[in-house]
Amino acid sequence: MRSKYLAFGLILVGLLLALAATILSVSTGKSEPKPPPAALRSSSAPSSTKLSQNTIDSYAVAADLPKYIEIPSIGIGRARVIQLGLMKNGSIAVPGNIYDTGWYTGSSKPGQPGAMFIYGHVSSWQANGVFYNLKKLQPGDKVIVTRGDNKIFTYRVVTNKVYSYNSVDMNQVLAPINRGVPGLNLMTCTGQIIKGTSEFNQRLVVFASLISSG
Image (tube, rainbow, N blue to C red; front, top):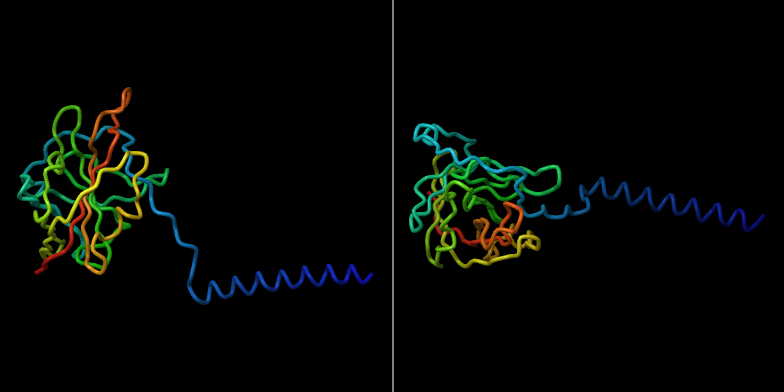
């Protein structure tokens, strides 16, 4: 009989501890950290249809979101920045057009702490994409982001890194290269086409840091 009461007491203590942990978690607002998203994968071929100047000029987003990106040193005049979420498989979606770039909505907004993550296609079967020349960026080159309220944010390239397509460190890709300074990290495909697919075997990431806003 004593062993039965002892077992019952142990079960009761366990339940009370579990309940206390749940209450503590709710009261402090803490939860288990979410794993980073997977690297970008395209489920279908992007469009190669060129955007009209009117389509680009009339593009609008919320005041605090990125609207355009310009990289004068590699000939990117003013490209739209589309909002990208996550696909069902947990990877970040990609822009539907090779002339658009995409901002991952789980990353920072312009000028905010952390890093803003923007992706652009390198090419399609028909034409070069917006980030075709991203590999030519050098430390010191400037990247200009225009926000929805037309405020300008200027970033300076710090470095770049190439990852295998199936081992991209998304924790690194979504973090600022200089701790404490808002960052901008740009990604595109590079390397060689994987035989039998339309997938490149590498990813190029350019890391930049904010130098001015106004």
